[in-house]
Length: 231
Image (cartoon, rainbow, N blue to C red; front, side, top):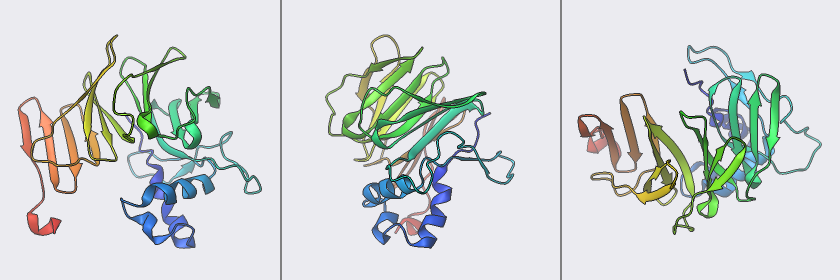
């Protein structure tokens, strides 16, 4: 089962200490502020079980000492088990965690990575700034060629054998992960922009400022909250 590895829970402490400016708490202005905040987090990683156990550190080998001035931090972590994780972040860094600990991998780009997702066949999809989109397979990187170089890919989600990419602009794409690695726009009904995606084995959700849509074998379903709650 997938572990809960959402690193943004630890940002609460940073907000309390006043490190992040107020505008960093808003979606539209968060990227520079959170980059600095995550850089001050020095590649911190925390983990807990989904049953609600306490958070524990999982960053031996990645975490910088407070005395070090290097700007480094993770934006996203994904994996299939505690001994099979990938963390990506500022400056294009990619780290892999196995039973022997963390190892920094060679990265194909210096563009900041914002999203990572492990595919069922062992490959890893990484997306980020300047339209950066890569697949790691057996230790080799392959770039996904596409014309949307101005997009910032901030969310990657899988659903069965399918893979979806969302960008900061609200656009959604579907990535064909066969030999061709084809990226194509994907339309979500009634939604002008999508900011996040999440999935289970049977359903995929698209979340945006104007509602929520789910996709299952039965088709599309509008799961938006009442309009008065969105105003």
